[in-house]
Amino acid sequence: MDIGAQLLAGIATAATPINLLWAFLGCAVGTAIGVLPGLGPAVTVAMLLPITSQVEPTASMIFFAGIYYGAMYGGSTTSILLNTPGETGTMVTALEGFKMAKSGRAGAALATSAIGSFVAGTVATVLVTLFAPFVAYHAVKLGPPEYFMLMLLAFTTVTAVLGKSTLRGMTALFVGLGVGCVGLDQISGQVRYTGGIPEFLDGIEVVLVAVGLFAVAECLYIALYEGRTESSLNRMDKVHMTRQEWRRSWPAWLRGTAIGFPFGTIPAGGSEIPTFVSYAVERKLSKNPEEFGTRGAIEGVAGPEAANNSAVTATLVPLLTLGIPTSVTAAILLSAFQNYGLNPGPQLFQSNGALVWALIASLYIGNLMLLVLNLPLVGLWVKLLKIPRPQLYAGILIFATIGVYGMRQSAFDLFLMLGIGLIGVLMRRFDFPTAPVIVGMILGPLAEAQMRNALSIGEGHWSVFIQRPVSALLLAIVIAVLVLPRLLRLLRRSAA
Image (cartoon, rainbow, N blue to C red; front, side, top):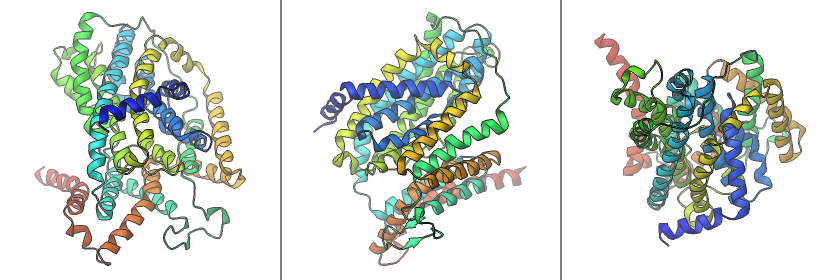
């Protein structure tokens, strides 16, 4: 069956009333979460993971995908009106968007943000449709040595680019790898690192760790360190653009889409890097450079927003085809797949093709829904900002507690969740990135299994990883990621 027929079958599945309802709920929840400062899709998806025990796989994956890219749409609202990014990917939007709002052009900034997100999301979804099956087809030919090196590359890049210190990133990764080893060895069946606690025999749930590190830690951190901060809201005019603003926006949307997509397909730290690159490009190419940093340049909103949404959509390529998450939320989505006994990778397109194509089709539907939700209803989303923080975060804690307790009805899980939440507060306070913990915990056991299988193929010799061309190339890239930045730093110091 060709791509067109598979996509049409996916649209037929995604367009059923129940799946359309889940897509709409995901988009609405995601937009609301994006609007609320401090929250994000990773926190929300982690908090809602327990629904995987109750909801059919296709519906829940469509729901989570809606939350994921819905948050990117909503995050620009607070960036523009409050100078408070709802999501890290919208930090750059605040640079020019807030200045546009202060000069009375909030409506134009919100319009170019929403339409740019729609254009970028749609183009990126077309690219996912075209390239994901191609990648999956060739990925089937990879063996255990190549997969182990791919996971090693994911570990290296995630720890190298997240946070301000590679050492802290590595520390967080090894914490995640250690947590992933708790329980029964999946090959030998031996008990490992349980400390005699029977609840650890089945391992520590990724859902529990994700909720503790993101939702609980976020609430506690806000209460301890940011609870008294206040923000002033800019006046919002009608959401529309003039003809000249349209002419200035559309090239920036296309450039942002082209910049964002490649970054989304590699483990390069999420959408922050492409948004900064896009902003730099727009500033360089603009015919109105005097507007940047003063009254606000519309290209400085259009380009980064397109880059953000393009990168977010592109993360589905490595997630679905290789089982490699390139962002925090993608790592938690991988956990959602595993809750259903599904392992994203090249075989997923063959074993669960209907689910994959329904998920891809839902991106087209979701983008259209989000355009409708964001342009006419932006005033409604702004009202969410009036929810008092104490009540908001208390509600999140209650919801997280109910979700975690509902998994196994275990009071032990609640104490463990709170303990992990306190660790999450300390990690955030001392600038330890939390993403490597989740990546290490999810990919660690898979990497261990692939390493053992590779060594079996090589009859116990580690040289198997350099004897095969693809795994040797990936190993060279891993070494380059670790060594080149330090080498360049030393060269700069010696030159100075």
